[in-house]
Image (tube, rainbow, N blue to C red; front, side, top):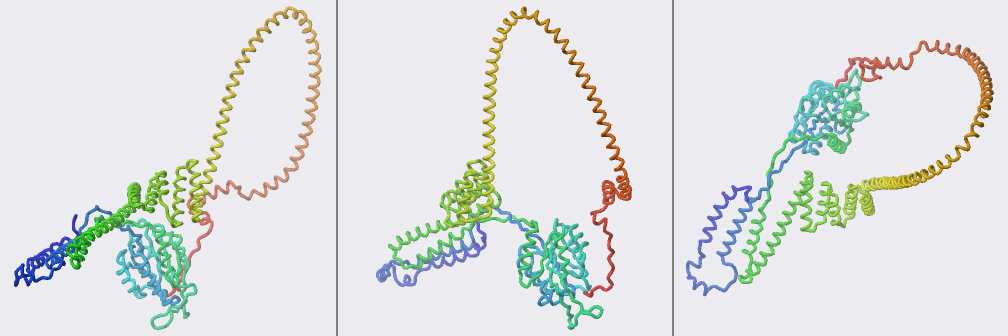
Amino acid sequence: MSFLHPDILYFLLPPVLILFGFLLTQKEQHETFFSKEVVDKLRISSNSFSLRVRNVFFFLISLLLVLALAEPVIKEGKVEVKAKSADIMLSLDISDSMLAEDIYPNRLKAAKEKAMELLKLAPNERIGVIAFAKNSYLVSPLSFDHDAVGFLLRKLNTNSITEKGTNFLSMLEVVNKSIKKESKKYLLILSDGGDNDDFSKEIAYAKKNNIVVFVLGIGTIKGAPIKRKDGNFIKQNGKIIISKLNENISKLATKTGGVYIQNVLSNKDIKTMLSEIEKHSVKRELKSEEVERFEALFYYPLGLAILLLLIATSSMFKRKGVVLTAFVLLGLFSQESRLNADVLDFMKLDNAKKAYEAKDYKKSADIYENYAKKSDNQESYYDAANAMYKEKKYKEAIKSYEKSSFKDKVKEAKKYSNIGNAYAKQGKMKMLEKAVESYEKSLKLKEDKDTRENLEAVKKALKQQKKKNKQNQKKSKDNKKKKDKKNKDKKNSKDNKKSKDNKKSKDNKKSNDKKDSKDGKSSDKKSDKKKDNKKNSKKSDKKKQEQKKKDKKDKLKELGKQDKKKDKSKGSNSKQATAQKGKMSSAEEAKWLKKLNQQQNSYMYMLNKKTQEKENPNEKPW
């Protein structure tokens, strides 16, 4: 145990000890005039505390209060605290066109108000300021001191930069120089867009230097004249000029990965802009410090001091009071122990939450589960199940989810939805069926889009598994049938071989007996057959020769017809060839296009001629 403020002990304990040392050693006034025996006879019997006893109580109370002020603590270790920021550079247009009063009170003042609102809405972000017109200047580097940044913002006006005009490229150069080490730079421009129609140079520069541009357009499309301090309006060639919001600046935002928003009277525009910047930006870690973590113990001496004060100022009797005070002390200490347990439990739950956020799911699950078993807290069972789910212990998570129960339908629906997810993650057939049941229970309590999608996905997975199981069953059956057939065929083949061998032996005996009788007759029949075959062969040769002659005649006729058709088609083909001599074939055209596009970014850029921009001598006077 240690004290956060040990100096209090050194400075307050000595005077307390000296003061109560005098009070406790000092006698009462009547004891100086009368003896103790006389005082006891004269004094009315009283069971209340004497003055000396009460002084002892007050002495103890003062000691306990000094200890509480010194803040006794138990060190629990060190925690790393990180500071992160998106680093937003704010760029304010202070050219004369921002004096137009199409927005109340004028564009510049409205832009300043938007910038001040951004400082309030983003207290944890580093913000810097650049002022630009024809030239650009760094007003404030990136800083957490928003009061100083706001002070510098309020002082800006159109006279801060003498050069008239609006140059966005110079402003981007200042941004790039002011934030060198960043991988990405986030810039918010508050401007009416100037007079540029083409922001291609600015877009190219921003992309090259990783600058993401966000633009809040200040002004209206209708526009307004620009009033000077003397009351006259700015003129050009004798005519009053109307300054309008240039919406072409939106390309600078959208093509560099940012967002363009036109201003409104309320603060919704700057709020939505800040939310868009937070979505697109990646916060960078600036600093990290190790801070010691303590468990405070000041409530122990403070609670005991209050208890002693109640006893010292009470009018309880000594005998009865001792018993009563004992019961009161026991009750208060039991309540204090409960309060202490509650405080410690709160700290344990906080540790479990931090462990969950740090992805130490095992530690988080153990803390939640132990607390749930001790206190029978339903939410702790639920939190422990979430940690187990993240740890991929799905069976244990399901058991913990089932132990929790909520009266709130929304929480109960989430519980069943999480149970369904845990079942679905296991992937087995039975588990998927249980997942469907839990999803349906969740949807009965409350309709949820994600739960509905999960239910449909699990149903599809079930159908696919059923199909696979059927296919596997069919394959297994077919394999069994094939095996049975093979076994039967083998048996039949063996039986057939035996029967064939027996038949052959019998046939051989019979054939040997008949051979001798048939030899004489067969020789006569063979001579007759040879004579008939010679006659039939002569007739077939004559028929083949006649068919060959007919086939030759038919071929000659067909060739004559084809020659006539060719002569007719030659005239038409020659005309088409002469017409296409001046044109290029598709293959040749593709080759030429490849050669032309070797050193160009796009095909359209190669075909179109560059238009030379004419210099405008009549530049607008803002």
